[in-house]
Image 1 (cartoon, rainbow, N blue to C red):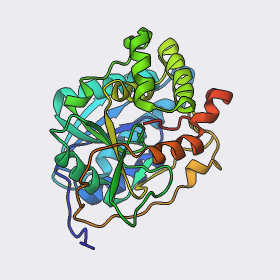
Image 2 (tube, rainbow, N blue to C red):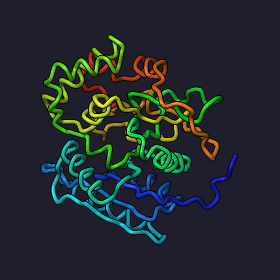
Image 3 (cartoon, rainbow, N blue to C red):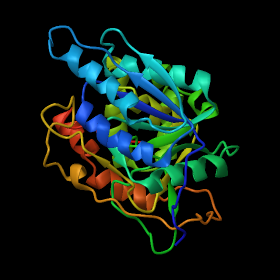
Length: 307
């Protein structure tokens, strides 16, 4: 296994933060370990009616400067007031990809290991010009998948607990999901998924996302699926979500199974797959285990990365 050594990240790293300085510090420690040349920080502002938010938001933003001790360009997009999860991510990602052509993206509650950065950077380079691939996931919600025979695989889902993509893919994103109203488009999603049970789950989620426009991530999955595009998923999980608990917006159950997925490691250099095709068995198992299925019955039990 090749040692990580003094590996540093050439790809811009983006971090989305809000009002959780302690968790932000844990993520920043891992970012600092790989010393990206460019760090882009997107921060939401304090909420009305939450008097502690002003201090918490300021403390969270201070964590960034306190933990950058290497030669690094920091670019900031800080909101003066609270935009909310949907608008902050949509505007933040739009700002991000106006500035850079590709990026590794983290939230303040997604703690990666160092293999995560190297994996994302390798995949960004490997599939940069392959329009069949739109997304790179750092999380594997099954924990591991065929790690004895491959370094990664392809999925129609993926994950946003640590991910990466290119501007050329993000240009296909429509936060309003305007094409969802077209029966022909819904049929194409049905064809891409090729599984009646999975499509029924997606149909309910996409309908809710289209009507309420409260979540940015499902439109991202939708954009990929209507373009028959794939996500790269590592054979081992490389990111832990530490955001489960009472302070979370959606992931409030600290004992949830997805809060305890162990991290694995990869061997470098990564061996390129000889094919670019979805692993439907992974997608079926992912669909069966993930709370996304339960969300159809419990509605918003947990935001679980259908990507």
